[in-house]
Amino acid sequence: MKLKQLEYLLETYNQNLNMSEAARVLNTTQPGISNGIKRLEQELGVDLLTRKGKRLGMTPAGERIVVLAREALQKVGSIERAAEEFLHEDRGSLRIATTHTQARYVLPDHIKHFREKYPQVSLHINQGTPAQLAELTLNGEADFAIATEGFEHFTSLILIPCYTWNRSIVVPKGHPLTRVGRITLADVAREPLVTYVFGFAGGSSVANAFTRTGLTANVTFTATDTDVIKKYVRLGVGIGIIASMAKEQGVDDDLEFLDASHLFEPSVTHIGLRREIFLRSYMYEFIESFAEHLKRPLIEKVLATTRRDEREALLSGFTLPRR
Image 1 (cartoon, rainbow, N blue to C red):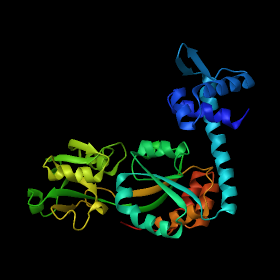
Image 2 (image 1 turned 60 degrees about the vertical axis):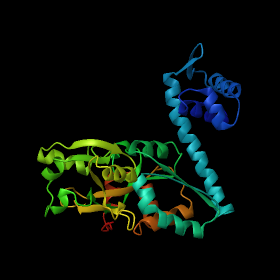
Image 3 (image 1 turned 90 degrees about the vertical axis):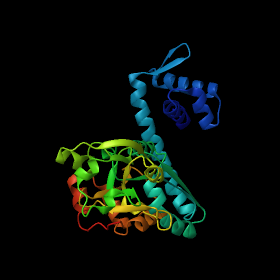
Image 4 (image 1 turned 180 degrees about the vertical axis):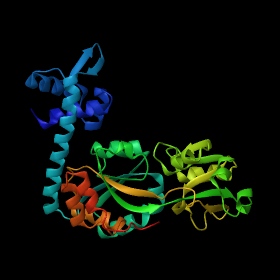
């Protein structure tokens, strides 16, 4: 069995069993992919794929071995990173999966500082929904995820809290809500809402607030991009519910940001890590820059801890900063 054969199988699975697309991603040929998987099947003595004409499917053995192949290739990647750590301490890559709000309003200063110190490390930011961020991280396409909502998708990752934040109601200048002394959830429910696509997923602070009061939100437009939400608020589609940190001086002067921290429980932004990941020194530095309380010794202890209660005890000894 060769690692290349496992790579062919895994990439074929990742590309929805499209060998031609897997070959393109791996910069090889479709016959090479097909022959590599067939040789792997011969060596293992089991069929990994079902073949009906040009249509491919996964056998139960194939489904299981794909999982093990991903784990094996991730561990090989960790070995290569460990070697790279000693050969080139200031070279490599850093791949972060996060939401638009984090990428647009929180990360820029940290990335600027990181780039100044590590100009030879390539940075890659992948934006998406919580489900997409979790998948990218679990598949090893991202080193870690930075997210707030949708943690039902992160059950296979170790989540480390970074900071708390809350929301604002965003309206155009002169909107009737600007004349309300203290906004209630009933005031919000009477308006058409423009908010995050995952803002009303189960377990989110916004969804929980409406559920507790028995009110129904009139969601008319959703998006993953905070700037898109603000654009449609400007167009009069509805009022927005967005992260307060997304207010930008000089850009949002035509909008009013009304404090909604009394309406919704604060949310916690976490970093999600695979347990088996090998973090380069510069990755630890980036995480500490993003959340000062997350020192390298603490992260190493958290990753080494298998029991959830022990992990929670390690992470309970500090007050999270607010943004």
